[in-house]
Amino acid sequence: MSEQYASDTLKDFVPEPADTRRVVVLISGNGSNLEALIEAQTHDALGGEVVAVVSNEPDAYGLVRAREAGIDAVVLPHREYESRDAYDGALIKVVERHEPDLIVLAGFMRILTPRFVQRFLGRLVNIHPSLLPDYQGLNTHARALADGVSEHGCSVHFVTEELDGGPVIIQAAVEVAEGENEATLKEKVHAREHLIYPIAVKWCLEGRLQYTGQGVTLDGTPLPSHGMRMSHADAAEELDEDIEP
Ligand code: GRF
Image 1 (cartoon, rainbow, N blue to C red):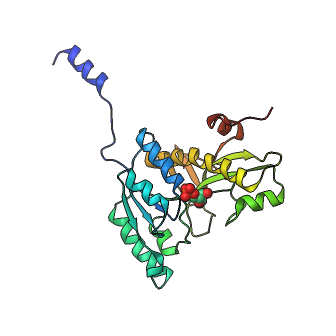
Image 2: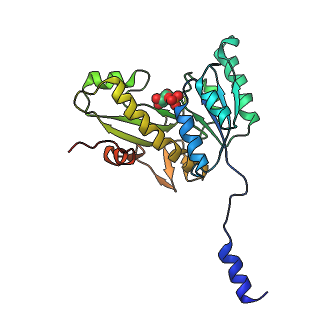
Image 3: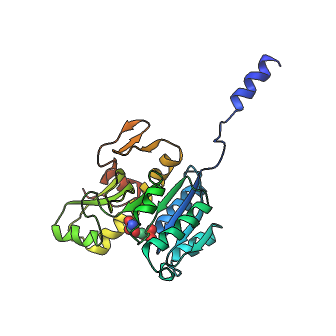
């Protein structure tokens, strides 16, 4: 082999992972976060492929989004199971059939059993519409407004047995504007969810993010308890929102 040929060959070599990282997304409703992940995948910015979407609600619009993207869309109605444990047993089987590297909860409106969580611990992430640990649970926007907070946002976190209590990977902040109402705040938070969820999923799929039991490391470095943080200004710029002077 000539020297010229050898160096050309090396220069053209683009390393690729041996196999595609596989993602299963669990939903119950609209699926706009699912759409953001599909969009990222389309632009080669997800680090893997959504191989299946599972919904406990047969009418979830996210199922339509999945089918339109050519993704396996599975309905597993919880009403057909007599207990939470029986349902989660069936859910484990459906999820495992797709051999996922990562399971992404995107508006999956069910509390998971410890058995499910333990099975996928470290491979199970969720997005929550608040700056955790503030406002765990439901109605986060209304509660934040009622408290008169100046800052709200969303968080991606690893799922543990504590509801909305697992270690945070990344948050995006939004400043609460004058005259803000629940609908306007929800819209701004949702837009930020669509920014940070694909980023977190990519870090996971690339193996950069690890759940250690105590917290989260990114590229081997422990993250602060609120995870990485996208500021209001950065998110607003990214989203072309009007930034107040
Ligand atoms: C989002 O607000 C997310 O934070 C919460 O459920 C909602 C899902 O919205 N966990 P969508 O179905 O992705 O539009």
